[in-house]
Structure formats: structure tokens, C-alpha cells
Amino acid sequence: MKKLRRLLIFILVTAFALGSVGCSPDKEASNNGLTAVKGKYLVDEGVSKYKIVVPKQESGLITIATSEFNKFFSESTGVTLPVVTDDEIKDGDKYISIGETTLLKETDITYEFDELGRDGYKIVTKGDNLYLIGGDEYGSLYAVYELLEYLINYDFFAEDCYTLAKGVTQIPLYQFDLTDIPDIDYRIAADGIVIGDTYTLYRLRQRPNSEMFVTVKNQWTHNSLEYVQDAPEANANWYNRDKTQLCYTAHGDEAEYKKLLNACFTTMKEELINTPDRTSIMLTNEDNYDVCECDACNKIVEEYGAISASIILFINDLNAMVREWFETEEGKPYARDLRIVFFAYTGYEAAPVTYNAETDEYKPNKGIHLDEGVYCQLAIIKNDYYRTMTDKANAEYYKNLRGWSALAGENLYLWLYSTNFSYYLAPYDCFDSFAESYRLAADLNAFYMFDQRQTDERGVLTGWSYLKSYICSKLAWDANQDIGELTDKFFDGYFGPASSDMREVFDQLRTLTNYNKEHNELGGDSSIYLQLASDTYWPKDVLERWLDCYDKAEKSIASLKEDNPEVYQKYHDHIMAEKLSTLYLYVECYNFNTSADIIDAYKAEFKEIADYFNISQVSEGKNISNLYDKWGMEY
Image (cartoon, rainbow, N blue to C red):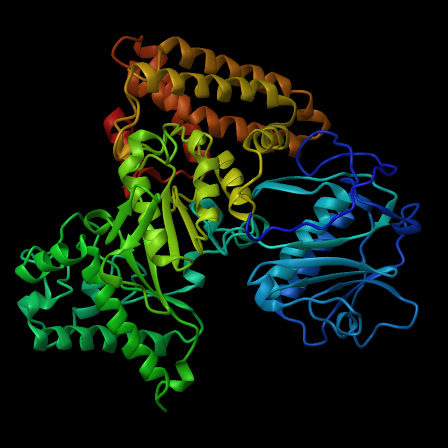
């Protein structure tokens, strides 16, 4: 990919240590093909002479980086490295330097922060020492996770589950010369269970939207009407006919256009003053398909080929006002490398471009462009995510993607979707589309990726959503990773001895999905809202086989109940979380032709598991109490 470079010498060397895990069965450590420095060890016979060195002016993230290193390293080796600042190091000390220490500056290691970006990093061996440096301190933290992967086979799957080699008594000093830069700069967490836990965010190398976006009247998105809600001079010309969207031409009235622009600027300025530390702000259309159809907006469509051109022209003007304000005495304290983001979404999704079939290129119409600092967020909501973006079923949406890429270049934010928002509890099998979607995003130089799933669920996920979260976090960093290999790693790490039993369910789901796509018209436009809890898609005998598989999985981990009850409980919880979706589908699809005793037992089991995990949502914005009302159960 455009950003990923790993400069490593791959020579087989002697493997080290015995293996075990953070939450899975015994696993052997591996040297990952690195060259060992002859006769030098980070750990030798269970002892280490190394220290961790940090800058004297240590930040919170560097503190977390050292804590994370020692947490996993000590669990693997039994060794906790002392942490010192760079002015405390003595001649002859051996160390792992994290961040921009004075020791790093004294070496001939070269690095460019602009090249590394926010999250990229270098890991370099120099003499007896290791140096970890990030584009910013997040990069240094991520370098720690990378180093742990190489040293002790560390991998992280979910809040309660990671794997690593354990009982390690010897680790050679390896010859690192590694530079790693993510394919997508901003990788935004998509699941509530990830957003709700800071360390899960760190370990999946993702961020919350709240970290980067200035909110407008407490709304970070779908906020265009909030910009003008307090404007005393608001005029009907500022809106479409039903006042459900802004009219970005003010119905062609130049005086009203300037008033509308000034009202939006006033609100944006106030929010920038209130939030001086964030670098993106949205002015985005409301969450509906309405557009303005006044004469002036229709003229924009005739001239530029798409109504979205009206937003671009408006945001460019607004951006100019903000940049000019940044140069004033009032604005200078709040000046920053600001990104003003608009939506290409619903009625505004088509780009104002023309396709040339001979050259297979898209060209912006009439020279329209995004000024510096203006970004487009393309939200591809009607795409059929059961199928790849380049599938003929998604031709229109792929055209929009390429068109906006031609227009926006690297000023492109992407908003994708990978759950069914009407049926959180049913598996939404979009695994066929992930690899291509993320490779396209990387190839098109997308700056930001938000692959939305269940952002409002903080209890537990079902329907293989934890697998999605793991795979998507990996692909957003390196879009060329093999999904098959990632899936294998996840099942072994997340389910341990029950891996093959649970994989049987997942593999049958994949087969069933392909059958349903071919024979039962599974998918189509806006498949994220498909009526999914239907017996058309879920044969009764298949659901019964899956229930049997969960029973087999429980038997596979039964020996751990006494030998290692904590690990047993984790695997048991993982199995039960996946069982939820099958119980839900069975009750929803077959309550009419199954004995009441069986259905009542499945309802009770479902509720017991859901209560244990504190599940709150049955669909987007809809509390699970609605399901219990439907099932005739008390919440």
C-alpha cells in the first residue's frame, strides 16, 4: 500500500521459550523471521538487564505505553523492566527508548514526523538498544504493541481477550529496522463496546470521533440546522420547502446567502473558541433524503451535474471566512490545521463529476474543487454490503466513490456500514466485502474511515461482530492483510479449545449467506435495513445444528472449569454471546410451528444471557424492552 513499509531482514533463527496465552490455550512464541544479534538478549534465563527510557517531560500516552509494555511483557516473561527518564540513564545501561528521548536524538536514526503522520512509527535497533518513535505519542504507543507482537506473539481481540507467549525465559535482541505507517490515517471505532473502553481503543489502534470533532450544539454530525437555530435573522430562503435541510444557495438571493453564510460562520467560530484542541468540524446535511429543489438549486444541478455542488461552493466560502478569521487578533489563539467536513450522503451522495469511458477517469465539472482545508465525507448508505463495492449491484455507489475520490483526492473521509441497523441480533454477513472496501479506501488515499456498526450498544455484541471489529481494525491499518489468516487467529484466540466448534457455525453461516444471495435475493439496496429475521434466510434445521455446536463448544472447554476457571469463564461468555443470535432467530422465525415449551425455554435462555451481558439495544435507537414486550416477557 501507499504508506506501509517494513524494512526487515528475514532469516530463520533459533526460536525461543515455551508458549501460553492471555486467554487462550498454550501457544508457542515465534521470532517472526527477525535476525537475532549474536550473543545479545533482552531476556536471558528469566532475567533482563534492560530499562525503559522515556523523555523527562513524559506525557500521559508515553506513560501508558510503558505501562502497556510491562503489563504484557511481564505476563509473558515474569520480568518487569524499570522505567527511567532520559536524564537518569547511565553509561553502559541497556534500554528500550520510547518517544523522542535525548538518547534517540544522539543517534544517527533519521525520522520525519510529517512522513510518519499521526500514528506511524519506527522501531530501530542501534547497538545494544531499541528505539521506538512515533509521528506523535500515539505512534509511540502503537510501536509498543508492534514490538510486543514480534517479541512475545502478542495479539489483541477484545476487551477481555488477548494472546501472548507465556513462560518465556529467553528473548534475543533482534535487529529491527522497521517503519510502519497506517494505510488510513484516522481509523474510527465503530462499536460501542470499543468506544466505551479506552484501552480497547488503544490496543485496536483506533480513536473515538469525539477526540477529533468539534461538536455544534452538542451534535457532531447531521447538524446543519443547528448552525442556524439561534439566528434571529433566519429567513425562509435559508431552507428547503419543508425546512428539513438548508438551502445552500439561499434560493439564489445574494443578500440572504451572505446572511446564511455569516450565521453559520458565527456558530462555527463560537464552537471553535469553546473547543480549541480538536481539528475537524462538520457542517453536514440532516439525516433524511430531502434536498432543496428551488430554481437556484436546480440551476446548480444543470450547471454542475449534482446538487452536492451547492454544498461545496457554500463550504468553500465558509472555509475562507474561517481562515481569514484565523489571521485576526481575535482568531489567532484558535487557529489550527482545521478540517471543515461536509457530507456526500443520501440526496447529496452523487458527485459533480463526469465520467470519461475512454480514459476510465472522472473529471470535476466546471472546475469545481475543494479548497484547502475542506473535506468530503462520503457515506455510502445504500450500498449492498453483502457484495463487494465493485459488484454490478453496487455500480452506482462505486461510481460515487470514484467520483468523489477524483474530486476530493486525499481530502476524502469515508463512512461505511457493516451491521443491520434494524436487527442488531441477527448476523449481518458482510465478510465478503471487507477486503475490497478497505483496499479501495487505501488505494484512493482516504484520510478517515468510519465503518459504522453498533455504536449505541455497550453490553455485548453477537452475530460475529467481535470478529468484524478485529478484522476491520487490522485492515484499516494494513489493507493488504489476509482475512482468512486473521479469521483463523481470531477463532483460536477468542474461543480457545472451542475454536473448531465455533468455526463450524461461522463457516456454515458463510455457506448459507452465499446460498441466500443466489437463491433468496439476500441483499439489495440499503441491505443494512433488510428484513433479516425471516425464516426465508434461516432454515430451522440449520439453527438447530448451530445450537448443537454451542453445546459441543461448551464440552470442549469443560475441563478448564476446574483447571483454570477464569479462562473458562471468558470462553464460556464468548460462546454464549454468539448463541444469543441463534436463540433470537429461532424464536423470531419459528415460534409459530414449534412447541410452546421449547420457545419459552429459548426465550428464557436468551433473556438470561442478555441480562448477564447488560444488552440494551435490539436495533438502532430501540431498547431491548421492545423485544421483551413483543415476546410477552417482563423487562
